Image (tube, rainbow over all chains, first blue to last red; front, side, top):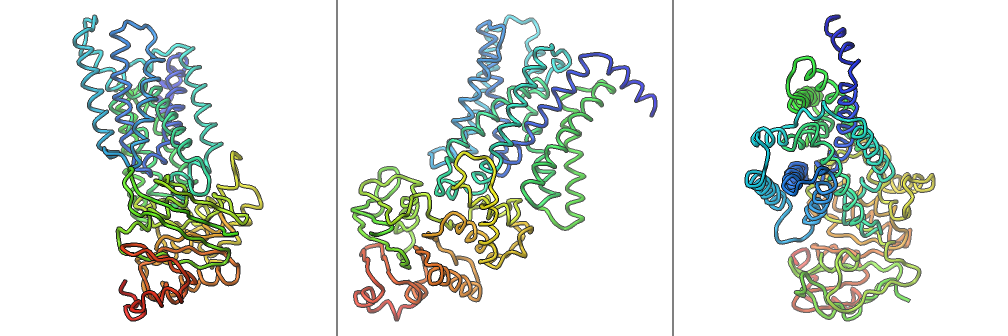
Length: 284
Length: 233
């Protein structure tokens, strides 16, 4: 046991390990806060869809030869998030179908573009690292850490300030609208935030596994708690601890960061459902 | 002046109208039942009155001190709510959202309002319980408390007793009647149950092939067979 702590202490002296932990924890926190709302609104898969959109946008940025793909990726993802959340209301293509359509569409176009125009010698390596999370979480620069920290603070602040409104809109959109809450505005807000979180999270777990960060902590928390506030807090705590644990394990065992975090999340979910079932409460 | 006035109102979806040329007025303290077959456009009408969808033509006016966002709405349950992890208190409190404007948190008065509404609906002991574990009747009381937080003046109820057993249905009707009598809250209710509508309502709006609006007595004159048909409509 002491050997493990010594090893952690040894790695801790490297800034890249600290950066990875900070960014990982922040992203996990942001995604779990929104996860509760998205799962309850039946939008669990939107994280997946949007991350594929982000993948497509990154491919376009690469083809265009942009050195900084962040603005384009973020822009495209935000637009798609707004379009997708909008489809919830009375449109011809229903929510889940729209997500599936945009998701696979963006994935296919992204890969196609990369294949046709890429100058990279190791195309499949590039694609694989975008999809499953690269080692780039371990090569973050100081400015990227600051950017991530800044955006996380904004996300958390917005969430706290609009917590009551997000609850009202999630629980009953029609009632909230009838009572004069600008439900459309808050739906838009949720869409923009989720897009930001996803673009941030791509570094961490890659675009295929982002959904896991969004839904697992929320689902685990719902097994244990019966009110919205406890579920949100529990989801945040679970997500942060799973991410920290996952990153540490990944560094110690040399496993891929993204999949290790998700594996820890799955484990946490199984434990929570067992506890939930033993107590006889918690469904959904 | 009437609290709610509909003039030549035409409602529907995607430019296709379901109901044309509706004219009616609701005054403070009225108890209006909207009856009609499935698909006749009752829910569409309610949603239009609440401003959730635009009318195709015509006007909806509010008056007598009633503002548009002061109508308390009791919607039909959605799938999302069936397994929503929220406590009764959280849900009732969310009814105060309309007063909040852009203020992020609830004030003391709003928390008191929520507590009073729960007391009135006799669900105070359930405050910390989870909504999804309650019975159908209890859930309706929670939603009714939430609607009371949003309004002191007018309640719009969309089939408040659907899916409830006869005993709970009777309790629910008694509760609504009490709000109408004692607190003077105007009630507009969509109902399937014609016999209950005739028992409690002061006015009837019948929509469908034949549109009728008037007092209960006038309705019974116009449709004498309604009494015999009872709950069948």
